[in-house]
Image (cartoon, rainbow, N blue to C red):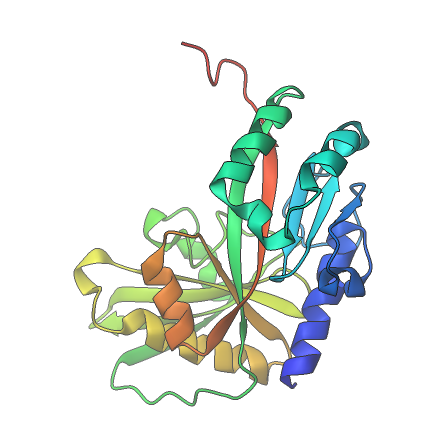
Length: 256
């Protein structure tokens, strides 16, 4: 799969989730749509987001409850789409969202792989784990990024690779099939083993194996997690898009 095919696959997937056309991510004007729970979406939520937005670095596509559309139309006027994700614009958006009982939640910085294999060579003791091998690791905090919190049939953990110190796991990279084609990689390295390049090695090995199995590996992190950014960049990934979402304000969350 080449770079163009990877990009097309990502844009098609996000068009399902943002209720738009793949070409809408490439325009100059921002696009506002209504939420839709598409059957092909990544199963991150059982309900539509009140608001979610995405940019590939040009315009923004915003999927939002129709009640907020008039305000959004005015708010986004004169704003380049990618600048909408800056903190001062988030503050304005957050203020409006609170009127409806919502707030901004996570902002994800997403990476796609370069199409060529890394073919990493390592002296680390490596072990591969298939889905059935992963059941014993659910609920363990030290692997909360590598694996889902539990087995999830709608986006199952497909595969993991671990580095061992004797029989002790130093680090684990795992991937969930968020869709049949897009498998998301997560990584955890125990604190005492960090700084040795283990994360880069494991993520690189896993991304290659995902490609070999006919899927597209992808990787996400937060804005300020520079260690995770470096792992992605050193493991053959490049920044591709940013997406953000809202969540409902819990009762008493901001009470004094």
